[in-house]
Image (cartoon, rainbow, N blue to C red; front, top):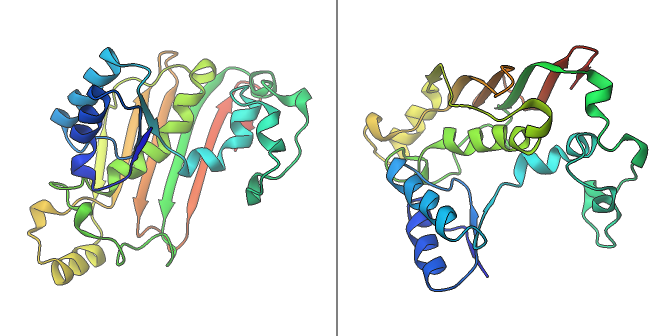
Length: 232
């Protein structure tokens, strides 16, 4: 098995080559940086469905208890003999899979991946892979973080459809840093913020707010409003 976590623009082609040579591949996000690369991955999944795993750990890790309530993960996940820090906890099995009974039929979903702290919210330490032409930009990374937990609970909210309205912005502080450090033209610099509106197959509206340089603090959360209650 091969884990690919190298430069973003090589992800799809190297995954294809390895899979065709008989390897199993774990691919770190962003999985593809443009439509052509995405098509390569879709072809792999069509022809070799058991040889490629798309990895997303950042927000899914934080959402484990939410996924437990939704019935996606088992309580044994929390009983590992290894030391995984925050993962070491105890859960009541009576609540596994009870999210629907607690909040009722979902009516609205919002997920925020907004980072503004000095540690996570700035990009001064990041390299040129944040260029939209070479690495896909930051929005692809953050969008995967935002949507992966929702894709895991399709049994609860429905399957995400094509994204509708998207509004984007780029922080002036980031533009000045990129121009100074990398001497890049503005058209190659990725955005730092996006608002995405979508619906799922059950007609529930889904709003995703993602970005860096936001509000001076970090907000990573999911809110699902149901007929009987709200989970945050």
